[in-house]
Structures are given as structure tokens and as C-alpha cells.
Length: 61
Image (cartoon, rainbow, N blue to C red; front, side, top):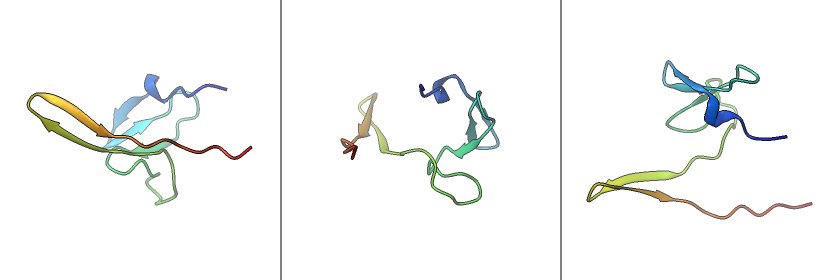
């Protein structure tokens, strides 16, 4: 299993998964229905650089 969302396309303020057709809002990462979707991160542009406030994700096996 691999994340294919990077091959998705933008439509109506959402990124659309090319494998399943699921939509995720660009601003929140959630599905338009309000259900949780993709992880999202704060982003800002400073001095022509894009800064992303990323955090590590703990996986519980």
C-alpha cells in the first residue's frame, strides 16, 4: 500500500485521490463531509521560503 495522493488533482478546493476518487479539503485535510481525512500542517511563507510545521507521528502496532 502506498500513498498516491501526490498524483491527485485539485477540484473545488479539494485534492482528489486518483485511486479512489475521495476528496480532501486543502485547508484542513478533512473530507468535505467533515470526517477526518489526511494529516495537515501549518504552512507559512517567510523570506521566499515555504515553512511547514511538521510533527512526528507515533505508530502503535
